Image 1 (cartoon, rainbow, N blue to C red):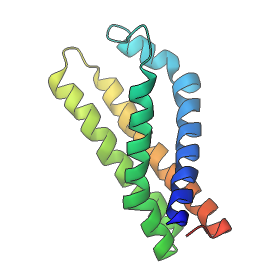
Image 2 (cartoon, helix red, strand yellow):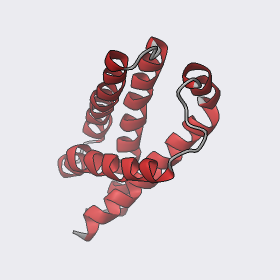
Image 3 (cartoon, one colour):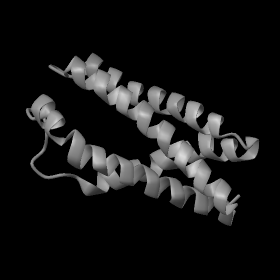
Image 4 (cartoon, rainbow, N blue to C red):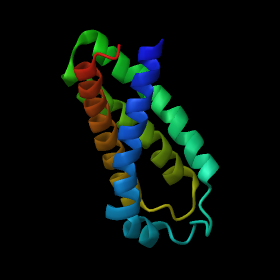
Amino acid sequence: MMGYIKAYLVALIVFFSIDLVWLEGIAKQFYRNQLGFILKDNFNMTAAVVFYLFFIAGMVFFVINRAVVLESWKYALFVGMFFGFITYATYDMTNLATLKDWPVLVTVVDIMWGTTLCGFTSLISYLIIDYFSFL
C-alpha cells in the first residue's frame, strides 16, 4: 500500500510541476486571450486542488500502476497519452457543445496539451518509480 501512496505522490509532483510551467508560463497569455471573457478575477484554489487530487488518482490507478506491473515504459507513455486525450477531450468537447462562444482553438490546444501532459507525466512517473522500486 505504501508503494501506491509513493507512486501517487510522484505522479502528483510530476503532473503539477509540468502543468504549472504550461499554465503560468507558456500558455498563460493564450488562455487569457481566448477565454478572458469568462475567466474569474479570483482563482478558486480549492477547486484546482480537488481536481489535481482526483485526476492524479485516476492516472495512477488506470495507467501508472499497470505500467509498473507490466514493466513497460511504452505502456506508461502511450496509455498515459490516451488517458489524457480522453479526459481532456471530455472536458473540452463538453464545453464546445454547451458553452456559448467556447473557442474551437482552445479545444484543440487543450486536448493536445492533455494528451502530452498525461503521456509524459505517466512516463516520467513510471521511470522514477521503476528506478527507486516503489511498487
